[in-house]
Image 1 (cartoon, rainbow, N blue to C red):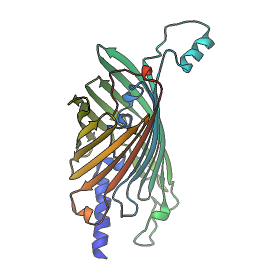
Image 2 (spheres, helix red, strand yellow):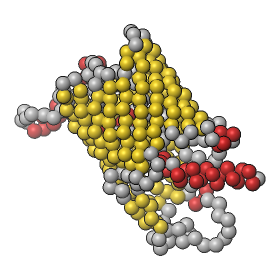
Image 3 (cartoon, helix red, strand yellow):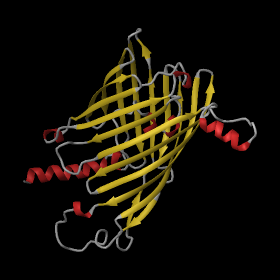
Image 4 (cartoon, one colour):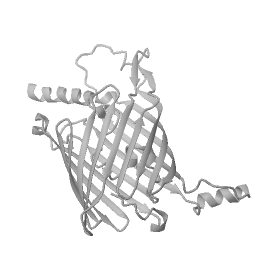
Length: 325
């Protein structure tokens, strides 16, 4: 009993110490870079709908779970949106259509007794410099954080002003910004999450504070074509939380005939990941398994993540030199 209690205590403190305490963790970030940087919205030319389901440390109760859906698209000069605007104005003016990307993100995070459900809207503006697309993005985020007191087990019956009779549901706004560059051979970007660092008060006497911490993400990757059938893609993601240690993800992915991929990744903090996926027509699906090198793996089946995506639009809508995934 003491052994299991020690494991649970370590889990709690690990959750507090990780940069993913407020932001979800993704192993297959290259499949949906929009989750990391708002400036990615619309840069593929397609309308893309992506789904993500992730569960960490399977085998324990109350461990982090993430479910999300994203959609992003480029507004094209001949799109229905652009035409409708022109008809209403009854004038032909210079349009930014073709340079604008939009997106949305709906998500739900479970972490022990805390549930977080939110929605995010994104606007991005694209510029072309020679053979490189440069995008600037802004996201506005609004989410609800709820404390499930039914999942709390207190050590005694003493009253707690933060729980008893207090406010258990909080509504929090914030914003994110980013810049992203992509070409045929490489992509790179930097983003700032929780720019406003919103603070809300909770508890019976509003004595508790919940503060969003700013985080900086630096992402980059390069695509090296070995031959007609194989393409190698090394990439990295550096996450720099404002008040915690930075975390670096390093990945190496091999594309096979542009229809299959497999790769390995290392995350500082003693985590190793293996992942792979396939493309069928316009549909994409990927799976990742995370293995921790610490003693936690003796009591869990690791972390699992599934991502799926579908792309709408003809190839003429996108940049012909841009290879996805």
